[in-house]
Amino acid sequence: MFRKIVFGIGMGALAIMMGCPSSYPNCKADDECAEKGEVCVQGTCKECATDANCKLGFVCDANQCVPRPECKAHTDCGFGKVCRAQKCVEDSSMRAPGSCTSSKECSPGEECQNGFCATPQAATCTLPTIYFGFDESQLSSMAQSELSSFASCLKRIPMSLNVEGHADERGTEEYNLQLSNRRAASVKRYLTTLGVNTNNLNTLGYGKNRPAVRGSNEDAWAANRRVEFVSR
Image 1 (cartoon, rainbow, N blue to C red):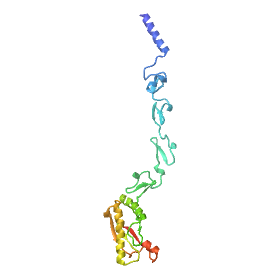
Image 2 (image 1 turned 180 degrees about the horizontal axis):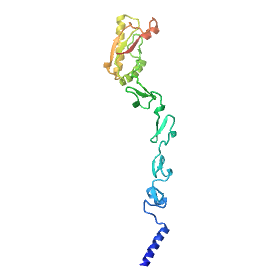
Image 3 (image 1 turned 135 degrees about the vertical axis):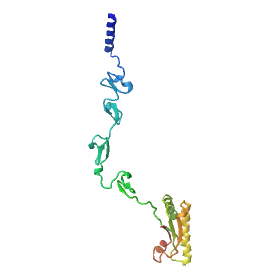
Image 4 (image 1 turned 90 degrees about the horizontal axis):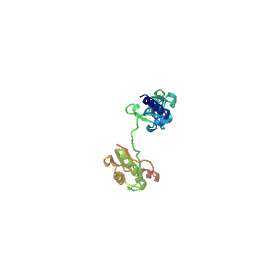
């Protein structure tokens, strides 16, 4: 019996001397925790001991790897920001009156534009003037290009328009009235083929009675052979 006890004590001492590994999570060295991807901290396997044990963007906090905080003090943030809940946020006390970071901070009907609350302007299309050759109602290539761009805008931002045709002073009033109507109809027809709602376009002809430029020369006549758009 005495011999067994002595033998048991001897084997226990031998195990200690030989450095037998401890059972997890107990440890004596980092290599005993390596299988779990951990390190030995004061006799226990832990996720980390220092920031170096964590992946990029994480720090060691209470032996656990956690995302690196954006800040810990106000001085860690730039001008106009303060540290709250470890994140840099805008300091409202330093904002200019009416400034904003999102439309949620603005009054009803306003939007945050370039850092300030403002009432958005109603979207609209620029109304072109289409010019014609002498005694012509057909569209030139330049006129078609202008109307193509205009049609693209009208399909995004529908508008109700009068399509008003005009003529220069040469010719009879009756003939110029017909010519101005043909010019307006030509413009409307081209816009509708491009997908503009025909119900939003109303054609009118004014002949030579509403000149854009007064005069009896080629410059005046060229300016008066036209179709204009007027919102209705």
